Image (cartoon, rainbow, N blue to C red; front, side, top):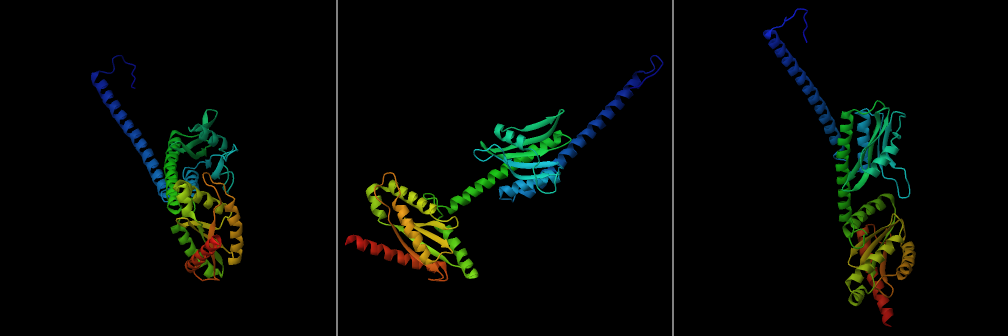
Length: 349
C-alpha cells in the first residue's frame, strides 16, 4: 500500500505499476509457499522411505513393532512412543509390545495406554487434549476387521498437522507388513502341519530328526523314536466309513499330543501311522510312556465309533539302536510290524 498527502497523487500509470509490483510479489510469495510445501513433502517421503527400508524385510511382528517405535522416537523425536496389542481375554489393560520414553534410558511405557486401548476398541484415532493441544495420539492398526494393535505417541508441545499425517501413514505401513507377516506365518504353518490331524507332517518331522541326529552326536545325548500304527484301522473305515475314520485319526492324534511333553514331537508319518520323537528318553522309558498312552487312547470317546482304538507300535533308541535317527526309524518300523503280528496272533487264538 502506498500513501500520499496530495490529492490525486497517483495516476493511472502509478496504479498500473503498483498492480504489476503486487502481482510480482504475490507470484513470488506463492512460489515460496509452494517450495516450502514441496520441501515438506520431500522430507516426509525421505522419512517414509527410510521407514520402509528398515521394516520391509522384518518377518517377526514384535521386532517390526520395536523398529517402528525406534523410528518414531529417534527420528521424529516424539518424547514417548509405543505399540500396544489388545488385552488378554478377561483383562482390560492393553499389552505394551514395544515402548520408548525420555523419562528413562531403558525401554519403558510412553504413557499412552488409555488412548491405545480406546483406539483399539473404537478402531478410530484417539487423542488426549490439554488446553486445546493434542498431547497424545493413538492410531489403530487394523486389517479386514481384525485389530492387531495401536501405534501411539506422546508430544509435549502438541502434534502438528505434519506429525499427525506421518504417524497415520506409518501406522498404515505397519498394518500392511503386520498382515503380510501373519499371512506368511500361516502359510508356513500350513506347509508343515498335516491338515486333518494338526500334528506335524512327515516332511517337517523328518527335517527335525536330521537336526536332532546332529545334536545327539554333538552332545552325546539320546532320544527315542516310536512308530505308531492304529490297529485294524481298515476295518474301522470299512465298518464306519471314512468320515468316522478321519475322526478316529484326529481324536487319537490329539490324545497322543496332549499326553506328550511340550518339547516332544509327533507327526503323521503316512495314512494311519504316526511318528513320535522323545528327546533325552531311553528306549525303556519310552516303553513305559507308551503303556500309559495305550490306556489313554483306549478311553477315548469318539462320536459315531464304538469300541477302543488299538495302538501297534515299535520303539527304537539312539544311540542304543543306531547313531542316526533315520536308521533308528527303520528299526522302530520293523519292531512295530512284529508287535502288530504278535497281537493279531494272540487275538486269533
